[in-house]
Image 1: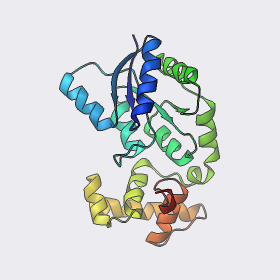
Image 2: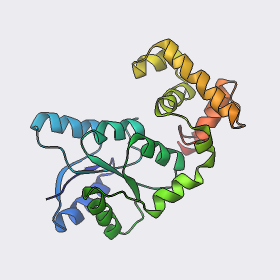
Image 3: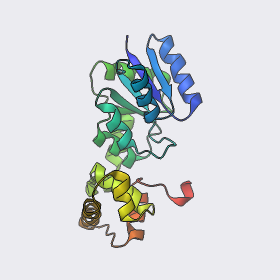
Length: 215
């Protein structure tokens, strides 16, 4: 039996998915609001890892999609289950190792089909995934690595560079080198960011941080 974990900070979404999956014969081994909660459950109970994790793109605990996917994919396949209109975040999930994305607006049959496909070890080449990645021209041109995006997210959001380094567990010099590379990459694609305010603008444009108007 395919074992599935549901990670979404909206309980109503989890309950709906759980009901459908169990009706179709899947074992919903875990349902919770964060990756940390799932990993704590794994550590406490010692069960085998699940086959597929349905993961919301943005959780309310401040984690990034890259962090979450990386923490999960070493033992399970991950499907992003969210609104597929944030191409930068979707590309970040892909770069971190996610198997694919299914929109929350998709029929439940498509969600089930995605779980079956990924559980069978097949790639999930669906329309939402392809459209999101294809439309993200500026981010694709910038080619920011996962670590660079993490540094930019914290630095552009207002943290001093020393605090960014401490938060990520890296040397100050490494964080500084990341910022330098980020500025070079944006300049190379015609989107210069010489100041911290400019970096914030680029981070908002690419969906790395939310704009103030988005809350």
